[in-house]
Image 1: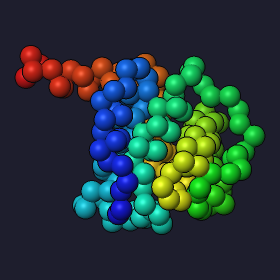
Image 2: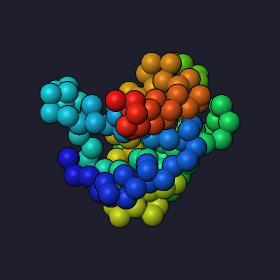
Image 3: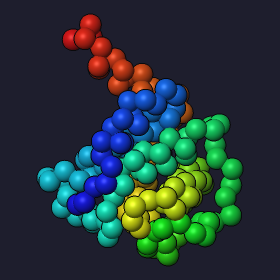
Length: 162
């Protein structure tokens, strides 16, 4: 898998101050690590374009930046530098849970908007699969909104904790 901007994404994660946004980025990053690790790769699919790690992080943070629930979008916006838009739209329409579908649609919309400035086209369906995998357990949304993931991560980096 070709990954773009890993250093910029790492810096972005380190500079995030909002617990909610940082929790969203950490949760999605851990999902990507699990999804892309060698033992876990069986049964998963690869992106059909290079994955821009900075774009992934920015889209996750933007999705959870405002309020506890995103406004209901009117489908996926036009534009952006994305491939597999139709597959992503089909994947979204198959999500039964309304809250999950709203967050996933908001995430996909952020990916589309951010992809306009990307170095290459982005596989929207792959990004969406990662996001839906991340929030499959509804408790993850609650832990993102409360900032619990960020707080627990901060505890692990505290030398006094060990």
